[in-house]
Image 1 (cartoon, rainbow, N blue to C red):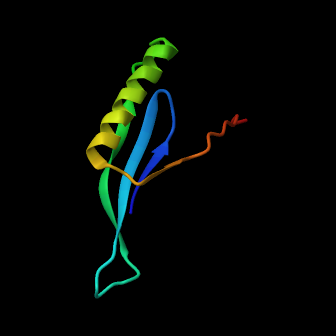
Image 2: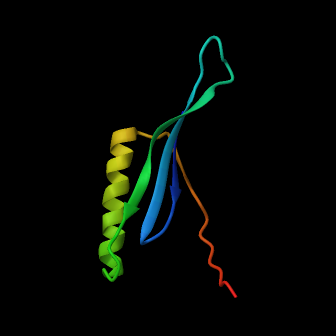
Length: 81
């Protein structure tokens, strides 16, 4: 099973692809990193253009790595005092 994990953001969007590999010697499986990186969009670029860049990049990653499922981290915002 291949899993694409996404750490969302409009400026920097992180991603990682892992695969669970099962063998006769290890039937429970072992996680292996397949791909990882970040998708960056320039500051001050209009939001629709940034979202299009992120969409296109994720589409390429999905076509290349062919994940079976996707997991997206929940966004949260905080203010440092």
